[in-house]
Image 1 (cartoon, rainbow, N blue to C red):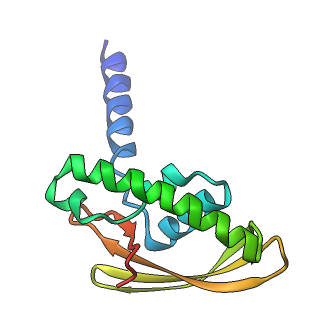
Image 2 (cartoon, rainbow, N blue to C red; image 1 turned 180 degrees about the horizontal axis):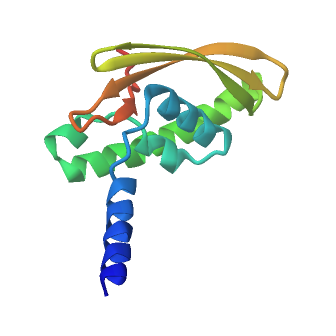
Length: 137
């Protein structure tokens, strides 16, 4: 009985500790965002964006803004593909973090052969999670 109780306690502790992982770093979020764009998963990309409504709890306006942004990103991506080609690959260059803001520099290669350095600007939410700042301020 003691052995079963001990194993159950270990299992509960392991599950609890797994859920207590640290939030993604700015680099992680920047890499996820470019990965979602590469894979044309605009809904997941938009979920990584910073919206003021997420902070002040206006869920209806947040949903509306996310839907509009998803459509805008899809159109913007399609225009970008015509100019440079699709995102082929990307790699991390560096990360600069200051308090609740961060800038992650990424090298992005396109199917046309062009290579650009792009800055992904991020904001930190009160809960410690990082979000891509679409305004880039």
